[in-house]
Length: 224
Length: 313
Image 1 (spheres, rainbow over the protein chains, first blue to last red):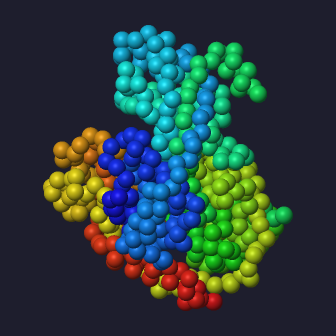
Image 2 (image 1 turned 135 degrees about the vertical axis):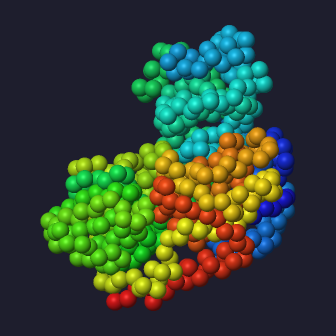
Image 3 (image 1 turned 45 degrees about the horizontal axis):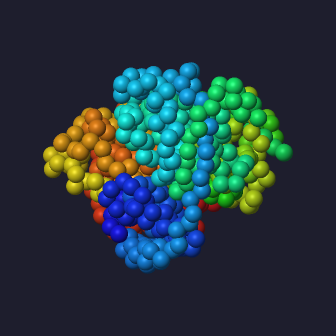
């Protein structure tokens, strides 16, 4: 564990220096022990690939006091039994007006659009963390063959449900927001609903698969 | 139930409270008032809990009708509020007779003015908070900025209204400033000495492209052989991140919760509400301070905000 003050009220805890499942497992374990039995001064937690940012109430603790206690939580996290990951399947209609960048992505890699679809839906992805917007899960790792940089100019409005790729990551936009990821398809599922338990469809640590569906299936599922 | 009618909404008026904390693992930023101190003081004057929902106006205020009357308080920036054509005193509880309209104009000093109303604005909470998150269209009044003709229900006042005003000493201590105090960011050592010197000595201008997600700064570029991308990590409120083109951005209340840009510094807690009052074209500077000083200033400010000398009756 490496600690770094990110601000006068936050502490970054680094649990690895490289993106991958081993570091992320440590992030998840520390997150879970903190969520299960939160210290009195805890105000917020921001898990990411290799780190966990902890926001505290400075009236109740300072950086060194927080670090001391977090080290104890770190010890507890080592012995925590890993929780079995949930597996989710996300139906996607690839290409057409729902995936306006599919052909460009294919052309960039010298592939056929069908091959991009096959590669994207071939893998089980790990949900590293949620950020950017409520329910936006960073999923990895995208197959190297279709790893593509972000758009030079982000779109002002990406429709909700759009499936995007950026670098070795893929994600679904839960809301209509600006966005710079390349859009290859769309899901009819609602990714975030405040009237549902857990609210975000994908939670940190989940395993996620994408399944290609037809336009008819998309329209049918969307209307349900 | 009493209500407030939006006669004209102003440039960007939203329902805000003190935000929703603790939802980082779901990717949800706290949001809430960009100047939480002004919101707290307004609520205190209007006899509400500190975190009741109020209206946040930006640069140009609106006009609001109170068919049943209310006790209100205007805090934050001075938007030249009037009641029946007469100037309305700021930072003080004011009784609005039934059918009267408060009219705000363009700002005379800072970025955001707050209208707190006895009983608070009643909207369905999202994750325990009434604050509007514009990016996701969540919370607040239908998840959006107010429009002409909106009718906002008001709650019953919860406490006895104090009919006071904020003391001059408190206003002085909490006043906006253009020199923001910062602590070292987690990636400060990645910046060259030259970039760090520029950061602490230079004068920066708040760009027109600034909003509740962040303030873009112009005047100096801080690019200096930085590595292109770092591993995305959590980003605190008030972080000063630097884009690949060298532009510094101060993250504000509707920030993204994670980010991959290096952060040179972070605005300290007591100056965060001051970030919320910076308007485009304002010239600002940064002053370095320590974590220990930042913490004692925070505790001092919290003592002041909870003190019985804050208001005078």
